[in-house]
Length: 234
Ligand code: NDP
Image (cartoon, rainbow, N blue to C red):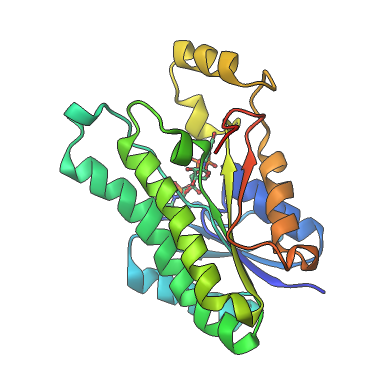
């Protein structure tokens, strides 16, 4: 049964691969972007998830065009890496506001309609770094670990209404975000990954579409790693 899906940051990278996977299986797919426009076959809404009014307006636009959001993929995220000693208050709060509070804004806005429909799927895109930690990533790791507590609390609040909330924790995926890493850091990371390679974005998308499907109705509050074994022991 086709669903209405909203992927934040679905204009590029992992979000785009996730959105394309839902399009491929016949769902009605909306994505948020910050000015780049929507890829072919998707409904695009301009939205900065740090702005609560913009989030509300984006959901309203999706509802008017495709109906209430049944599957929310909270994917939009940023990094702003530096060591703890050098990290400014602004660097910390900006990453939290985007990755964690932004996801909260979207989940909150989605939950009303999901409750009414007595069906919903929320998937948060976290990171291996959320539970593994990352030197120079105090802000990012805290934001991504926070998503686990958020998903598990939503599971406890909304579990009886056929609403699930799960976390997908990618390892190192071949996107602009990892492209920006220094070569030496990339080589170091590769050595630590049991699979010996980075993943492609569609390998993350496969876990997300599975969690959003009817077969995954009894999976909630889970952290699903897609990391080639990097984070084993989470
Ligand atoms: P990219 O940097 O390629 O894309 C980031 C996406 O987030 C873009 O669509 C961007 O929009 C959007 N975005 C950023 N800030 C905001 C904001 N304030 N409001 C709305 N949208 C915003 O990242 P990836 O595709 O690599 O990452 C996607 C998610 O996966 C992130 O949450 C990231 O933390 C996570 N992740 C990535 C890993 C990797 O190895 N790449 C590993 C683990 C997790 P715009 O195009 O407008 O800038």
